[in-house]
Length: 341
Image (cartoon, rainbow, N blue to C red; front, side, top):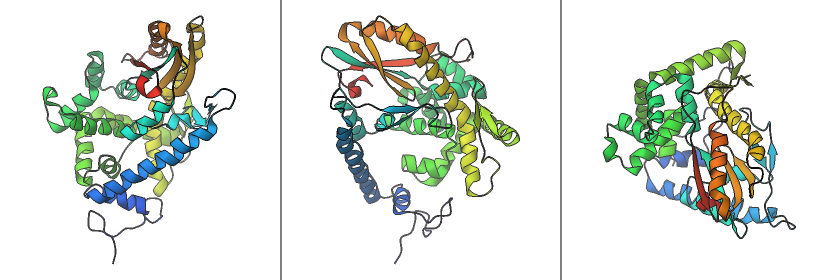
């Protein structure tokens, strides 16, 4: 007796040469059956408990009553900061259960937590570097990019958009940046692989400039052995000319690196300028989570802090890089990190 995959085939070796794991098979089966979905959901909750609910308590500093992390400035090839011991950049946000972990992070009495988050910064950078005029104009007009993509992909008028259709379009938008395959998108959305590949194919048909950007970036990386952010920082791509299983991964990494790397450059420029900008205000920058900065602020000074920090963040690229799309920052506030996001 054996277990077959949704396409009727038996489990086999994956791209890395290893046999498919039980988790891989469950991910495949979850696209068509309810029971594997329930098992995966249970595993997610179990991981939340062991990794965060239980483990974070051991990291509370006895003197400060706070959890302190360490940052590595060169912890990621793209230039993103890496958080360790514990990793506070990995606190979940995408699922309802995961977001509840953030309820445990609270401000001192009389203060609030304020989160300022770049809005779709990687899509804005992609629109700039790939020269996608429709996306540039949509950002200028304040159009919901995920709803716009959903309308284009699924032929649904914007005024008839549903949250589920928008969620699928959001997964496509961000998946394309990372060079996602039909297989990967199918897993993310838990839909048949043929449907997922169809979404990706239609995306490239609608926005051909993105495919051209990808092809040009891979060609540049193969010739030079690196790619660059918009600020000129080089990101090495040593595996770009590899053969076999590593080739696909290396290409996806090369495609994403200039976009994610530019976003990392932008927020680091904002962080460098932030202390001087908020000097004299009853506020402290606590944490960086990729595209987000978290502050602790006295209740009466929240609006001033938001105005100041937003100005720094939205103009962090200038004058070194003049983006065709204006950066935008969303702000939230609350007694807990969950409320602020």
